[in-house]
Length: 271
Image (cartoon, rainbow, N blue to C red; front, top):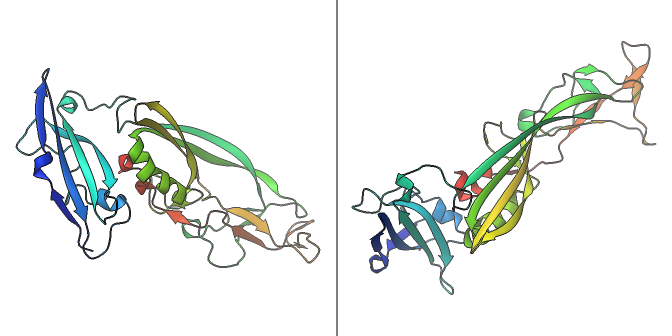
């Protein structure tokens, strides 16, 4: 991979009005070895070959990079990115709800009852089931009927304000790719494999402004489900152990969300 970013100097602009400075820069990006197929390649080069949010405009000490727009040059392997600079960010570090790049996080802590055949069972690493084997632990079922245990879960809602082009070119395809998958690395303090991306809702809030609300769920049990082995008739296979009544003979883990995704790549505002 040989990423190249060339600034088109003729597109530079810089102006001051009402005490506020605004500026812009445009870059043409391409890779002569491996064609760039998605905007994420440009985003990965922020702060390396390209500016990053918060960088100053060349030779300026007031105008900082605040937003950008990425577009593909039709009929070519080239991409264009335009950076917008403003001095407005020097007065406050807080973005407003209708400002591009605004991110709001809400968390709902809850608990629900789930079926369990074993207590203190062995958890597979990051919730990935690699072998078909008994989960161990203390038997708690009665004649093959599970008990209800309280599992604590957390609902994450991340709402952000973006330009329509950012939603269409970056967030939407990334969200599609991540739905129903677990985090492949620590995310918002949650261990690998403990958060599932459930999807997003989108609404228009202004001219070319869109509000995207992402939904995720954390589960301290890594979203694993206890499943007892059954006989040919579909009945749970039981056996008497150290109780006066029979209990489930073997119990396996099942992972309904076997795949992983990079949650940090879903939106450029999360990095």
